[in-house]
Image 1: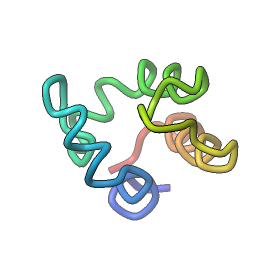
Image 2 (image 1 turned 45 degrees about the horizontal axis):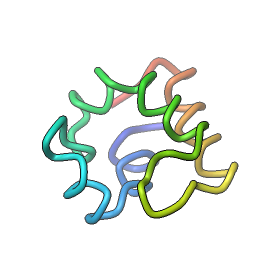
Image 3 (image 1 turned 60 degrees about the vertical axis):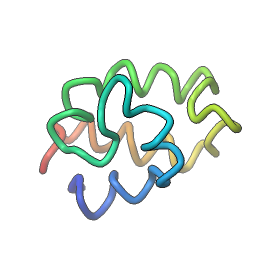
Image 4 (image 1 turned 135 degrees about the horizontal axis):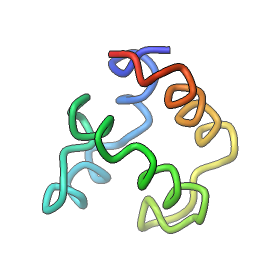
Length: 71
């Protein structure tokens, strides 16, 4: 599990654009700092704003957090 390889590709350009007011979804530092809040929104189905992720994508994000959020 690595941010650049496994997590960053989960976020589309439109997801990044929608969240730039708060943080950058393509930034390791930003996503790492907000990982628990992002996970909560993903699990609630309120992120991304155009539809919930499938469970498999959420599981990848959760595994990255559980692995210690490696760069």
